[in-house]
Length: 275
Image (tube, rainbow, N blue to C red; front, side, top):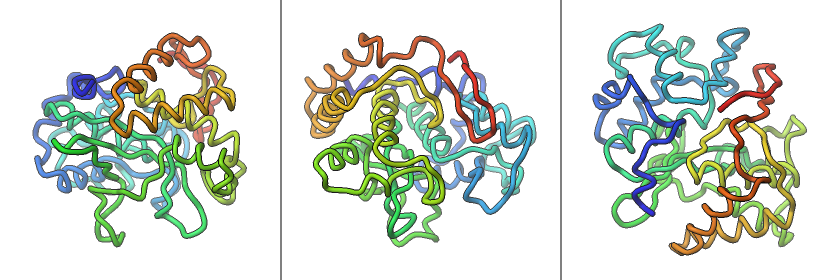
């Protein structure tokens, strides 16, 4: 199963820009800093983006992210980019660029969908981080975070809550689901949000690293229960659960991607997109 996480997906494949990734630092913290040099968060940077710039957040493919970057800054990815001129994206884009680079080096890596309790004391923001195999264990790394801004190591983030963990805790009555979502001032939270997050986590786990606002299929509470159980078992090293999860995702017509998603983007775009 480890080999699958060494292989690029249609979303993580850098294509013609692969050589640029080869020149990024080998050291993980330095690599994460290089990724931050390429992406600016569409909401959290204190900047306002509109029109075509805001639409950059819908760049699903690493090739598209790098194409946008190179259209403004042709040359090495380590050359400094002014924050306002970086590719507009979100947590998912920091994570998939990190994963793409690690996979190119033959390191097993994947994106994880869930929630970050470390941005606020009373809110768990929806979030995506990279996860890689260090030879002994899976390690979560949050390239969006500058080490100077947090009291822990962003290259090893044990506080991250996966969608499966959040859903399971919610179903057991252990958490307040209304404190999990996009933002405490927005309605995207709660039971339905956690439910949809489980399907996103399963998709990312199986190489469909879609955007956080891409929707497809139909997931029920009972289905999420069983998927979350498989995800948690797989995280504990159960290879059988990992295989069962993949089989379920690939064969259940209510879960699998059929070549298109309904994108409901913060950019204002609302429509079906081929993926």
